[in-house]
Amino acid sequence: MSTSTFNLDRLVRENVSKLKPYSSARDEFKDFNEDMVFLDANENPYNNGVNRYPDPQQITLKQHLSSVKRVPTDQILLGNGSDEVLDLLFRAFCEPKKDNVITLPPTYGMYSVLAATNDIANREVLLTEDFQPDVAQILEQVDHQTKMLFLCSPNNPTANSFEAETITELLESFKGIVVIDEAYVDFMEGESWSTKLQEYPNLVIIQTLSKAYGLAGIRLGICYASAAIIAVLNKIKPPYNVNELTQKKALERILDFESVATEINSILKERDILSKVLLEVSFVEKIFPSEANFILARVDDADKRYNELIKKGIVVRNRSTQALCENTLRFTVGTSTENKKLIAALKELV
Image 1: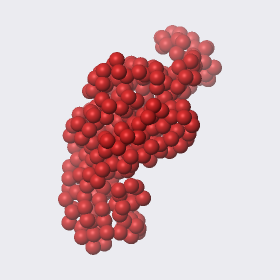
Image 2: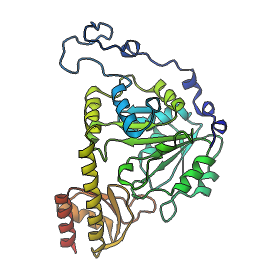
Image 3: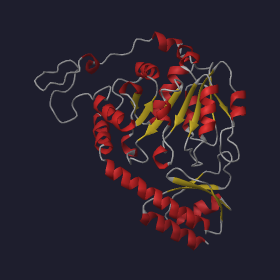
Image 4: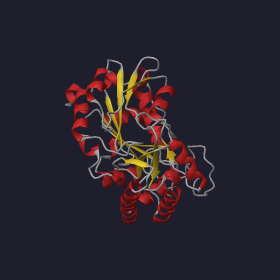
């Protein structure tokens, strides 16, 4: 899609277009010279490490992310978890009771929750039997009020990535915003769609530090998009949405390249081992291909097997209520020790 065929102004809510964003004290004065006396933000003046408000634009963290991901800083937005970033997208581009979005079940459940929370119609188009987007059915659901399309790739709970040709066709055919949720991108073989941001002005990429980087507890979500889209989101984000402790911990982890790479490689190795063992379990009927840090398996009786594992002290996720996922369990790849306990428990059940 060329820039000339994508009209961002048409997508932005009128009230957001007219909105004058809140200007915090730290937005108005950014020079952190130690000799300066800061009496502008009504903070407690006694230093305890976190008595000052954090950088509202997370400049240092964005600069390092920019270097690692090769995306300009003005095309990065950080949020209090990916869920905040997703919510900002709804609030920026979708008019309550008027607009709609498209999601592709089975997929991440928060898309539908956020749509309902923001009073936005959610048009669901089931994935195909091999868990790929049905382009024809998706485009059939589109009308002038369809603002966003959500693609989770690698997908949760199915663990597979969507075919590049399919995503390209949707990017070129859909006139709204295409959101690709890449929470599990670090576990897949292909490259991130963030490399295509200059090519597709309607593309938004969502990533997180909760999975491969092991920072689920600090809640940091990342959005990569055009500078124009990021500017819209910055207008409505809370002024200090990413706290100081989160920024420091995220920066520390991003700079620890070797540890992150080692853990990812270990998870991939354990994923392969676990996949092979699961195939040998008599009540496991099918293992679905995985490019994530989890495996989806179809079993004979998911409710029964889930409860049996609980009794053995192992918690997995029963995904049987999801579309196309009847009698499935989702196994997160643990450490070698944890996976051995799981394997032993499965063999005991047999």
